[in-house]
Length: 267
Image (cartoon, rainbow, N blue to C red; front, side):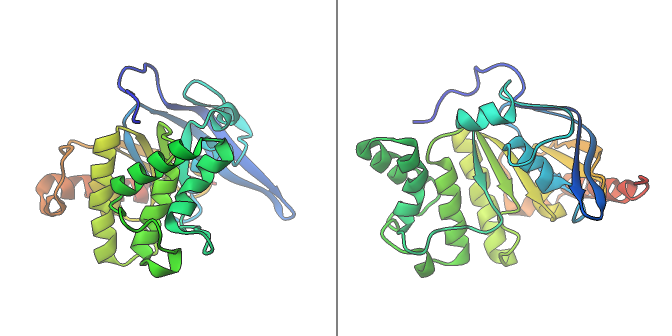
């Protein structure tokens, strides 16, 4: 089911001079300004910054849910709209967003039904992704029968079901307690290692960004700008106790410095 992504050349996501301004009754709101970023195939890139800095707006622009007003943005060499039509990405929102009247398998199956996959293919893909997120045997349960962490895993499974190359995740673990969040962070890293997908991940948590990412994009308050892009030297396999290492602490310190530096930008 999983495609060979490593032989595909060129950047997966590329932004050049990207800006996005919302027109409101109180005047324009400059959400993003002069964003330049290249994301390579197989990268795990976290976006971190204060509330309102444009992290989610940038992710939504990649997904063609918002329209940039300046600059260029490509996804797999296409416009975001073309990438959406070609099913280039799966999107995981802050809330699981599962339909309570459908089983877990039924929720995961929904995009496959919409896309016209055969029932045999739907069944195979649903079983595969439920196994990937460690929900094998829970397909016949309803969302209200699962914990919050399990519901988020089901949401990830739904985004994985049609095997898009890119997974966009908008603070998916922000509402969970620290113990559950740690476990899901570990599981997400294992999932990323198994699938080789390119992941864009929005978070407010410095430890989460450092633990998960190959690259960390630090953003300033509105208008959202990139103040630093940090390439992580941490190994791909990361036990949770790596967070006590000197390397981890040094990266976290650099992220904090980038966040502080962001406040020096004038709106």
